Length: 576
Image 1 (cartoon, helix red, strand yellow):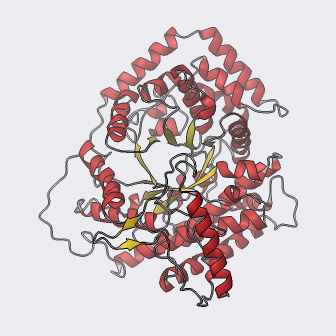
Image 2 (cartoon, helix red, strand yellow):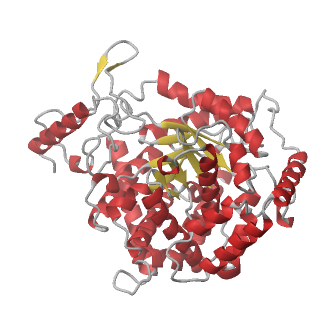
């Protein structure tokens, strides 16, 4: 139990941190001196609220103060007063030039960062003229075949001055190398680049199914990337551990929380197995969560995630610096909650989900567009999605007080319940790998994850949860407005964005022209050097040799295919 003296001491520590943040920029990039705030009626507001002075507060040590372990209430003492969440809209369609226009619109309209959506051939490591890419080029994201496409994608956008998130895992490393080369060609100092690369291969085997190679080669590449970024691009986060796709596949909130954090623990084990200092590499890990429509459960999930991560990083992995204990996360509103029926209702769903992410303390946020169940967003629907965040930030007062729901009986009970369920799942995962006492190439959590992938456990757990939810819908135990309740409507069809097949033809013409104009001998040598490096188990790091291939204008498909000659492919086992 937190006694009054401990609570008072905690408040004093918080106040000291808050006062220190009054110096502009003292909180780092994107921070500002916190300002005084009032309600819309003019009533002054404290930056944070807690137990009354001199009153005992059972369990308050698990809640605490913002900016202090276990970070249940957020990473920063100032909350959003000193560091508002980053508005990072996810976008990509057609070719690089078209997506560049959308990026400029987002930035000119007040977006704070970019998030790249790639098309399916790019996500699978294929060039746009591969037979498997037929009919898919530019349809669910932007096509990127080489560094030249990356140059066009960010034309006129100074990469040294913005943060960029790239949602790609299987071929993430060569795509990242293309991003670095595009920055080089802008004349940027690549050591100062800031952003996030998803790279999370565990969630691909668990939920999204976009892998290239078996797990071990992917982990080798990820370990190389962690080392490279730590040494050469320290502000860039090489991993975004992604629960979003796990939740979208049908997982419950507890499963999303537990599977995602377990994946994160696996990457910590990977870094430690490489001899990296946990206090140095752990701040380069970020997370990506879903904000679903159950408002309070989502808030509790985000708060529990920070608390679990901080405790495991300190007690299990020996991280003794605060930044290494922080769980920083991006949130996207739930695509799976959107409906094709009565699509304007999706604006409401998205706003509620975005508010849950904000009240849960997200560090950056993407809001889905109302038409995303039908097609890629139009400019109009993308603007509505962006304005949703801006209304929340500028008009509602949600940035005035840090963790305003902290201490709520309901929210704290949900937070504790989700944490306990997650811990039970961690035990199950570790047990599948033989437990802490067994021999492990990387670590016990990693062994458990790989075992769960191999035996289909993750897939079956998510499938069962999705099945139960669907049964509840069909029995009217769960209701979705416009689908199984309140189905009458006066709204008609909405305008949708259509990607012309001419985009694919144009992309392939451009790709053929680049192949024709490049130095073929230089490309052949770079790819031969890459294959030799991949086949050398003593090779210290593959990133520099991949960069050389990208600079020679080798394509994504050529680079991924060359590595695949040694790494092989992965086929998921059927499970009954």
